Image 1 (tube, rainbow, N blue to C red):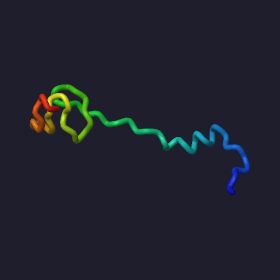
Image 2 (spheres, one colour):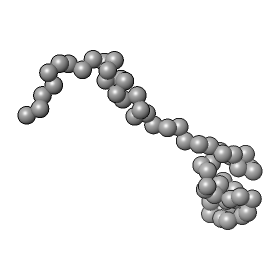
Image 3 (cartoon, rainbow, N blue to C red):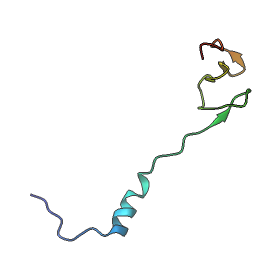
Image 4 (cartoon, helix red, strand yellow):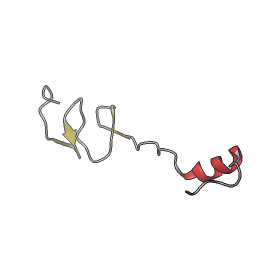
Length: 59
């Protein structure tokens, strides 16, 4: 069975995990001013790229 010969230090463990962080999501602002995710219709006003794609009460 494979067993580590030496203890992995906190520094080396941190260096290995330095690329594992979660990326912050991109935020774009709708014409109504609400922050939304890119390439998605606004959940407040229902517009996408300046067009009304979902009625306002359904969004």
